[in-house]
Length: 173
Image (cartoon, rainbow, N blue to C red; front, side, top):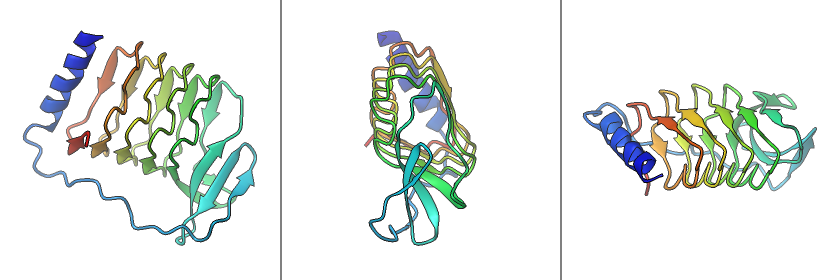
């Protein structure tokens, strides 16, 4: 566990060293269109004014979850904070290709989660995103990721490897 933490820190420093081209991640200036929460199948979502969708909550019990690229015709660009939090049955998650942001604690304490397939368009992994995913074995962050929030992978006890791309501009606070 201590060795893993040291490898993560060293790997992070190596991945970021000399990376002068990357810019810090800036959350897109999107505004919630109103306070309406919509339901489509196992998902609850809301819309931004640009007619893109944010998955607000997942109400399913599937072992393997495929987060869609679109929901009711709206492009899914974000998973809201805590959207999947405390789900005890999900083992694998494949995220839609248009996804840009995974919110704070989105998969926190999903204890059965072993594998996550992140799309190339993702640019931000917020704080505590995978905190407490005690069975997450390995994760490879795509080259578009520029920001990893604090404790994004805390208490991932089974994790043997996290691949952090050179595009990461900042880790933590």
